Structure formats: structure tokens, C-alpha cells
Length: 378
Image (cartoon, rainbow, N blue to C red):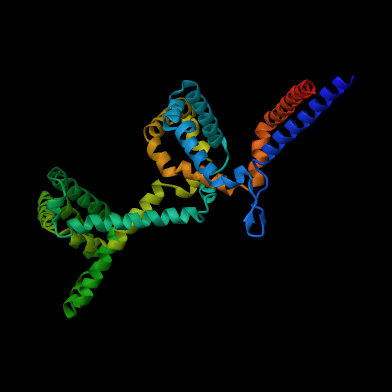
């Protein structure tokens, strides 16, 4: 009976010592968090192993992540994985579809980035662009003549229109002077003419009244405008004037028309053909719904593929610029020792318990062996 009691006692003592020793060793990995001093002398094993080696641990973890876990080659393999890329395409398609189906207007999307008075700013930018483009273009052309600037084919085409212009002017003149309005205009002109002639005009008015003169002059004016000689003379005159105009420098044309008039005309045409306000108040979907299938089935997969290739080809440079090793190091260093302990224990709590139990088991076995040795020595 004494034999079994001794063996059991030694086994229990050994198990307690073994379990306690291993448990204490595990706790000493983290505890104490800070060094303990007696006077000026620091107690051995303070602080714990991990608090003492935290900086070295941070460096080693950063190096391990970069050299063994998150390597350029592993990332490149991921981008070569068809299943991963298909998943990326599905995700991108869902995101793009969600974006396109939203009822938000273009104006609301732009304003969500902090841009206010969108239409005014766009119109202002367009006006500035028109003015700058006008100045840039005219700056190179002002010293040149119309004949130097306009293509020869266009000049010939314009000259070929002169007979049509001549006929148009004469036809309009005929129509006008044959009308009641033209008749009244001739009468007013005749009255003004006679009044300006002084006594001679009064003398003529005494013998012939204005109505008679107008009735005689009107057919002559119509006959004059209908005569081929008039047509030839006007056509010749227009050709001579056109030849003179061709020698004008562009600066003179600008002066005649007016710079501000040209810029205002261009701005008005742009606003007329580009209804910016109307476009901004439409939802994005109204512009994209006709191309939805093409965007989702062609453009999005292609963009994902191109992005994957771009990242894979430049992953080394990107990782160098990211300084992942430093990021991991700084992150670990920023953790409190309590947080590190919590993280390690959350991962290895079961294993640490098993180590404690193993220590108790080994201690118990050693206690049993010691008990046998004591009995033998006795």
C-alpha cells in the first residue's frame, strides 16, 4: 500500500511541476510586458520574449511576408489562374451593371465628387477652348491672304457661284421694283431728288407731277435690271471685287466681321449642337443602355484581362513602391503587446494547452520513475 501511495504522490507532484513549468514558460513568452528592476538591476527574463524581441519580430514578419508569402510570383500565378480571372470578370460585370442601372444623372455623379455648378463650368471651359483655339488658329493665319489660306478648289467653286449670285441679285431687284413697295420707294427717291435740285426741280415739278415721273421711270428700271448688259456688268464687277477680296489678309476679314462676333457665333453653334444642360440631367443609363450587352460581354472582360496583364507585368515595381515589408513591420510595431498576445493565443490556444498537458504528462511519468528509483534505493 505504501508503495502505491509513494508512486502516486511522486506522479502527482511531477505532473503538477511539469504542467506548471510549461504553463509558466508559455506565459513568459509575453509576460511581463515591461522589464522589472530591483534597484538598478533588471530581473532576468524580463520583459517576456516577445515584448523584448518585438522589433526583431516585426522585421522578420515583414521579410517573411515579402519573401515567402506575398511574392511577385505568387501574385502573378493568381492573375494567371482562370478561375480567379473569371471571378474578377463576374465581379466587374456586376459592379458595372449596378453603376449603369442607377437612376443618378450625370450631373449628380459629377457633383458627388465635390464639383458644383457643373453645366456653368463645362460651358465656361468650352468658351475658353473656343477662344484659345480661335487665337491659336488666327495667330498663324492673320498675315496670310484669303487666296493663301483657302484651297484652290474652294476658290474656284466660289468664283463659279458669281453668275448665280448676279442672277439672284437682279431677280430680287426686279421683284422689288415691280412691287408696290418698290414703286413707293421710287416715288420717295424721285421726290427727294427733285427737292435737292432747287429751282430746276421746282420747274420740273410744275410741268410733270411725281406720279407721272415714277410711272415712266419704273419700267426703265425694270428694263435696265432685265438687260443682259446689266447682268454682264454686274457679274464683271462682282468678279473684280472677288479678286480684290482674295488678296485681303485674314486680319482684314477679322476686322470687317469682328473678332467677338466670330467667337460668339462659334459659342452659340456649340451650345446649339451640344445641349449640355439636357445631357447632364439625363441618367447615365440613358446613354449606355443600347450598349449594355457589348459593354458587359466584350469591354469589361477585355478591361479585366488588360488590367491583370498590366499588374502582372509590373508587380515587382509595384511591390517595391508599396514597401510591403515596411508596412508589415510598422503594423506589427504599432500593436500593443497585449494585442500580440491576444492574436497569438487566439491562433494557438489549443496547442498551448496541449503543451501544458504534455508537460504534466511528462512530469507525471518522471515522478513515477523517480518513485521507483526511491523505492529501489531504499
